[in-house]
Structure formats: structure tokens, C-alpha cells
Amino acid sequence: MGMGSKMEGPSTPANRRDPYEVLSVSRDSTDQEIKTAYRKLALKYHPDKNASNPEASELFKEVAYSYSILSDPEKRRQYDSAGFEALDADSMDMEIDLSNLGTVNTMFAALFSKLGVPIKTTISANVLEEALNGTVTVRPLPIGTSVSGKVEKQCAHFFGVTINEQQAESGIVIRVTSTAQSKFKLLYFEQDVNGGYGLALQEDSEKTGKVTSAGMYFLHFQVYRMDSTVNALAMAKDPEGAFFKRLEGLQPCEVSELKAGTHIFAVYGDNFFKTASYTIEAVCAKSYEDTTQKLKDVEAQILRKRNELRQFEAEYRKALARYQEVTDRYTKEKQSATSRPYHFVVDTKIVKFERLRRGAFVDPKSTCKTCMHNIVQ
Image (cartoon, rainbow, N blue to C red; front, side, top):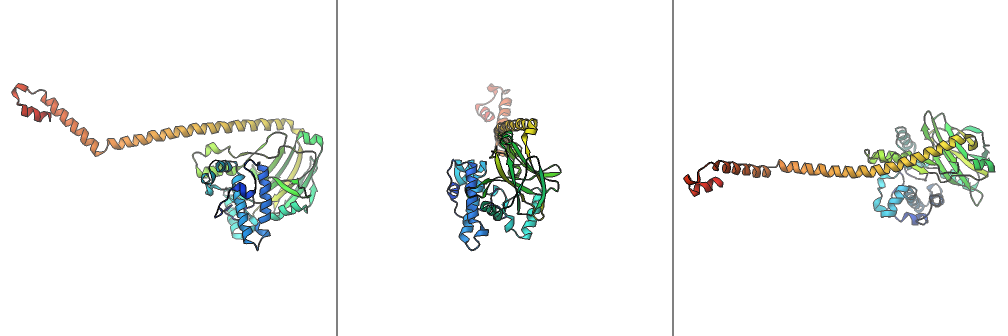
């Protein structure tokens, strides 16, 4: 959801500062507070707005790097517990700003995406700035209707959805699909104090069957979304243990309800080259109460399964460690048993035993003490 400037994602600053200090937020700040702070700083220091200021470019990198840590629950937990040492810089999500890529790099990014590599793209600074300034054109999208269109890459079409008290209480669903399997982002903006619109939520399109789709669900209970990049990164780092991480990409959506009034949504073109075809619709959940309840039940089941997998992983890791310990001991014992010193000792003992056994049949009265001494030895 951030605004990176390089294809390899947020680069590591030469001198890393506390990410909370960089974003000017406290350690107990909410995800939304962190996002708000990041957006303001990213717009302030974005290279597009500070072409002649190299210092701003470095500050932008620092802001992007800090946000890449604090916006990820797992990385934030790791940093809070053990600082930068607990973080693996190489595992940062790949996030690129298409506006700063040349044609060749864009082609490579498109190719990697086709091959299934999870590449996150940022939203154009121009789109975010126009929204904050309130200079965007907003088209009405009445509840129960749909609108189809084509949006240029790195551009956005804005829609205003007006809901009454009853509709707000029943719940609202905003859904975007593309039969052309275009890549896009569904955005939700909140009214800014200055009359503009600040980005509050973002959902990247994902392929579901023969279409790509994205949705936002404001149903008065906690709704979750699946971040597929989490599982992809887990698979790359630990293929055997990736099974346990399949549900770790389940992330809670920050906003679970809308109040009566007009709300601003946008469809952002996220294709690498072509325009994005889409259909956006706004639906009142009153007509889908059974489906809403099923969604609530299914997500509860998924959360329980995620907890079960976490517990199972702990048991598995413990058993695996014990197995490794026993295997290592077996290997050492086997090496010791087949080593030359061991054979020498065993062979010597056998010879002595055989001599002693043979000597037991010798009549002590007919054998001198010296001979018996030699036999025993």
C-alpha cells in the first residue's frame, strides 16, 4: 500500500533510524494512524515533487522503509521484540512505483507477475495529491447499480456512493470485477478536513476463476482479506514449513462499517501497459442476509483453523527438533562403532577372552606360573 520508488522495493537506508521516530508515531499507534502518517510524509518527500532536492529523495526512501516494517504485523512484532536484528531485509515485499520505471524494467515486472511472483505496486503520487486537493471528478454510483468502464494505467476513476441510515445499518458491499482479467486497485477515501479525500483503504485485485476481482465489505463485524504475498514469501524462505503459513496472510480490514452519507471509492488502473477494464457495483447487504451470515461463519472457521495450524506448527517444530537430535546421535554412534580405535579395543578384548577361555582347560598343577601368566596376558 506504500509508495516505493525502486523495483527492488524499499531500499535499506545507510543509517537506519527507529521507524516510529521516522514516521513520528508512538509505539502503540494503530495501523490507521501509521498509514495516515506515512501518506503525508510520502507525499511530502516523493521524488516526483522534489526532483531538484536529493535530500528529499533519501528521506522518502527512509519513510518507505520504515513503513514497510510497521505496516506488516509480523515485521512490526519482530522489530518491537528485538529491533533491526530480528528483521530479514531480504524478505521485504517487492513494491514498485510504475511511474519511475522505464519500459524495460516494466516489461520485466510484467513478466515476473505473469509467472506468479507477488509484485506490489504503489499508487501514483499524482492521483493521491489530486484526491487530497479535492480536484478529482466524482461520478455517482447509486446503491443497487453497476458502472463499467476503462481506466488508464496509474489513473483512477472516482465514484460517490450515497447511503441512508437503513442501508448503513444493513451493511454495504462495494465490488469490482474484470472479465478481461485486468489488474486494478479498489480504493476507499475519507473526507479530509480541508475538503479533499485521504486514502483510507486499498484492495488489490486477485484472480478468482475467469475474472479478477476486489471487494470491500462494511457489514458491522470484522471482515478479513487474504494477502497472497505472505504465503508466497513463506514458500520461498521455507518450502517445508510454508504449509503452516497458508492462513497467515489473513489480515483484518481496518473499516467494518459506513455511516449514512456519501462515501468516495475509486478504481485505479494497475496494468503494466494497457488500460484496465472493470465493472464496479454497490450493493446493500439487506438483500443478502443469508450470505452475510455464511460469510461470518466461514471467517470464524478460518480463524479457528489458523490458530490450530499455529499450535500444530509448534508441536511439529518440537518433534522435528527431537528427531534431528536423535538422528544426529545415531550418526555419531554409528561413526564411533565403525571407527578403527573401537575395532582395536573390541578385537583385543576378544583375543584376551579366547586365551583365557583356552587357559581354563590347562591343569594348573602341570603348568608353571610363568606360562599361566603369559596365557592370561
